Length: 257
Ligand code: 13P
Image (cartoon, rainbow, N blue to C red; front, side, top):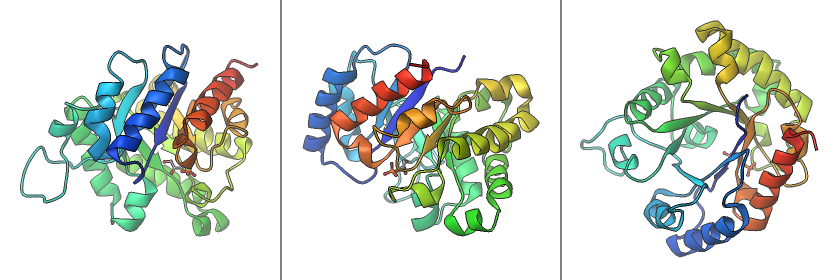
């Protein structure tokens, strides 16, 4: 059984003071919850302060990006060696980084290797854009993204990774995929590709989230699907009551309630 995993990607939102306030609220709403892993991924600047607020909490902490070197002359970058003191998870290869900051499959692969070498647990994002989706290229594209990302990783390393399938056309648009549509790609493409790489047993153990316009009123549709193990939530993770409702509704749906 894969433990459901719901994470909030705060993107470039929240000052340190705002982040602390939000996570205090979340602690009050979600602390001690069983049967589901919950994580928040604030901006780098808020990691240390949020970590303090979460001390002793069941809510986990993640970052949104990482460089692949442990140190060096890379102005503005943050290394896995630095991150491991602050957090447990790290989002890698988000489409916004691929799109706006030129991240390639090769860079994503290097980041995965580096994060894993330092004991960080990656959340790897994959997903097609609208054009690719309309052209019927989703399967080939997403499968190639997964293969490129996992290149050179052992089964043991692969098992540490959570994959987030985030179709770009669903991110921030208010137009989510359907539960069935997302389940088909997650099971039929992402998990199937992982099975081809590592065998069925390993693939069955890897958690795969859906991301893209997840809200309190649509999370159940995704979590009710057998292949979908959780969600990577953007906008709706910025409000404590919404994120808490997503976690609660998602967990209930997974439990078949
Ligand atoms: P939204 O939930 O705002 O659509 O963002 C999804 C996302 O990109 C999470 O990483």
